[in-house]
Length: 50
Ligand SMILES: [Zn+2]
Image 1: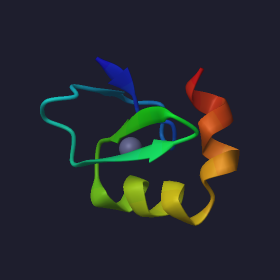
Image 2: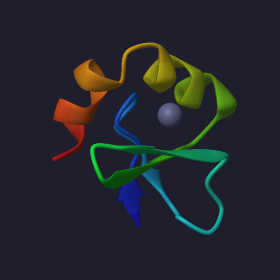
Image 3: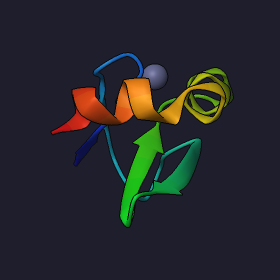
Image 4: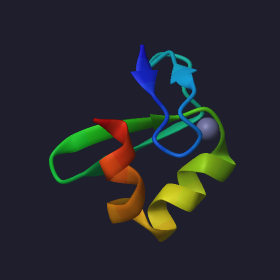
């Protein structure tokens, strides 16, 4: 499982609605909306995902 950095939901990597690579890390999202938010401001959300 991975943590969606936008809404902090647990996301199954295999069932994620989307993913994005940022700073050499891959982030997974529960929905396209979360993916969009992340892409608009990746540095803000990447910090949440530690
Ligand atoms: Zn989400």
